[in-house]
Structures are given as structure tokens and as C-alpha cells.
Image (cartoon, rainbow, N blue to C red; front, top):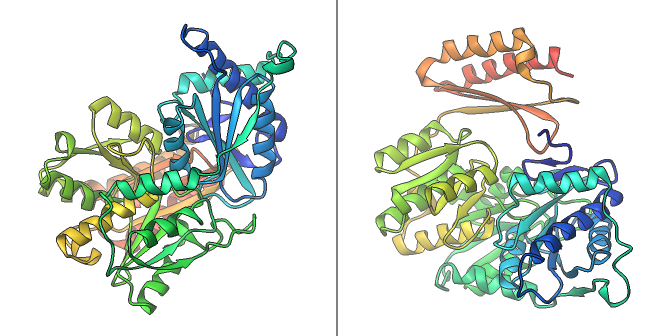
Length: 456
């Protein structure tokens, strides 16, 4: 069934335009409530009304959707617990910690401030499966939810959790056994996003010297020339302050990009490699296997092979990485973009916790971040985003397919071509990987030019 509202990471779009409107958010709250009530009716021991945790990032439009979702849930008799601006992974953790029936995050992650999104976690802290999202879509689009049977004391109530930040801070610190980070100088870029309060405290309380950037959100500056989308900004501060590491989070802090002490940008592929080898040496890497994606660099795959670690490559999107991890019962997976999932601790990508694991390894091995990544060769990789209005199947355009085939033949076994539509934005991503940066850039531009001709 074709999805009309949900993409690969919840519902997302420009705030106050369809589908990211107050009306849809209200109906979404009611639809989620209907699913929860239906589930509760199957539990004979369930007496209390369902409860849902709601968190958000720092976008001004978050107020619209927080209020609309709360109204929709309460109108169906559900109790709502509001935590305000908090990282996406914190909401997943709190959903389990509070034994809530669901968790909802209002965030468009790394997208610009004018966008917003809504994603939902089940009671186990994992994102909803496709089948449930489709059921929710059906309720919303068919407009077949009634609330007139919820009256009097049956109406839900909304509460604010005052100690939510403290709960997540202690949980995150506990993932590295509360080891001291004394002696480490960190530059932390919060992207003016959801982690602007919690993440600086986590690193400071563990003893690190922390230089904090972009932790003054104003509702419109989230991700603006900051954070994981712009690691070149933090690089300047790392070198200027002779820091040991730079940590750049995105708007909802579910992804992280690092910068080493020499100013090199360290992607999610590097982070996966560091943690994978560490866990393998500790005999803690399940089946000596990790999950990456089809976007992961060839250099990562080769590095893992050299260290006798297998790699399953999933579709792009952290939800697909997690699905593969669950199927194979694995405890490490992630994306080049910086989503790192450590299932011993988290049910979704967590930028802060991933950074903590790297810091722990640096302390234990007494090595710099540059030393830890020295054995990983990165093939030149070029990604061009082509804006589109409609995501028409590329197979409809022979000229585009011919150009893709032509480039693949020229690269042969020493490169890769991946052309796909984004699951969260209206754009087509062209990724070319090979041994020669100039050559792969030219090939990517050629394919992008063909797409611009035919896909508007």
C-alpha cells in the first residue's frame, strides 16, 4: 500500500502546510489513541488509561504540534506526559522508563527550521512498524474517528515531567560505567537543537572540559550552519582550541559526526569501525557482525573484512538498520550520516551515547581519535542532491537509466553508483564512489544533469 503521510522517518514536511498541519496532528493524536485503546482492550489486567510521552526539538512550530497532538490524545481519554525539548533517543528511553504505551517526537531532525515532523515510538522504544503506521494513516484519511463517547472524567489529562532531563542524563552517563573523562577537551556543537541543555551537562558531569557551540536556540536557528550537517564549522574550533575531539549533533541529536584532534571529519562509518573493533576485542560484538547501509563507504567494508567482522548492508534509513539488527540479533549498526545504534543501550540512533562510546575507547586505549581511525581508508564519495517536486520512478526515463548504466560500466569493480529518492525530503540523491575524486564528481554531475532534464 502506498504511503500518503508517513515516510521513512514518520510524517515530515514544511510546518503549517499539508501534511504538517495542526489538523493532521490532531487527527494523528486521535488515531494513535484509537490504536492504543484497541490494544489495551486485549489486556484484561489493564485498568489505567493509556499514557503517551511527547517531546520535541527547538523549532517554533513545535508548539503547534505539541498542543494539537495533546488535544487529540486527551479527546480520546489518553494521559499525556510532556517533556519539552529533548533528544529523540531520550524520548525512546523515557517511553520505556515510564512504562508508557507510546512516545511521540516532534522534530524534523536535520532538516531546516521551517520543516517539522512527527515520529512515533511503541512501548518498547522502537519506531512503529509499517503495518501500524498504515493503520494510523487509514484512520486519519478516512476521518472515521469519533470522540463524543469520551465525556466527563473520561477525558484525558496532560502532565509535565519535571525531572525528564535528569533521568536521561544519568542513563546516558551509565552507558560507559561512569568513567571519568578528565583530561579530555571537547568541542560540542548542539546545532541549536534538542540536546542544547542535556548533552553539555553529560560531558561536563563526567569531568571533560567542554567548549559548547550553538546552544542558544531561538526557534528558527536549528541546524543553521551548525551541527552534524556542517562539521566544517566545529573543525575550526577544535584546531583553534587544541581540543581532543569535536562532537557535532544534529537537531534532534539522534546522529553525530566527529572531528579528530587533527581536524579530520569522522563520519558514521568511522564511528562504526572504531566501536566494532573495540566490541569484538572485548568479545561483546554479537556474531562478530554489524549492520551498515548501502551508502556506507567501500573503505568501511574492506576495513571490517580485515578485522574479521562481517557486515550486513541495509536500505538507507535507521529504521531499516534496526530491522536488520533485530532479525539477526545484532548489537551494533548505523549509517554514514551518523545514526549509530547500540542496542545494548538504545532502541534508536543516539548521537550523545555514540560519542560517549568513542570517548571511552580513547580513554581505555590511550589513543587519540586520529590514531583510532588511521587504518580505515575512505574512497572518495560524492553525493549530489537534486530537488524534485514529484518522486517519479526513474525507470520511466530511459536517458537517465542509460547514463547510470554507462557510469557503472566506466567505474567497474572499483566504484559504486547509487541513485535514490530521499525518504524525508523532496530530492533525488546521486552517490558515486570510486578511486578518483575528480572523476566521480564529474560522473555524479552528469547523472544529476540528466535527472534535472526529466524529473521536475
